[in-house]
Image (cartoon, rainbow, N blue to C red):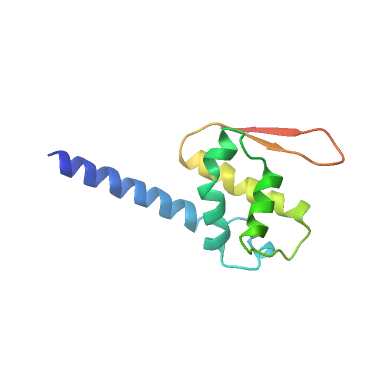
Length: 113
């Protein structure tokens, strides 16, 4: 009985991850790689963003270090990243505050539920 419950739990988890990675994000063409590559970097660092250990700009720098290139200026890359993070939070029924630091302005905090 225990293994059956674990099997169902694993199956639902895989379905949720598949749903997250198959979600279309506006601005997907801003990345010069497959959507799976850049979404994987964001997905792996989602909890750090949620715990405010990492902001969007740090995530963009990490993506550049991973070899992901952009077709647009990094300031425009924040929009599809934020949309994808919001979608992860929505799919997981979580609340997240996204902090984005712009060198010309004060920190912007967006709360998503």
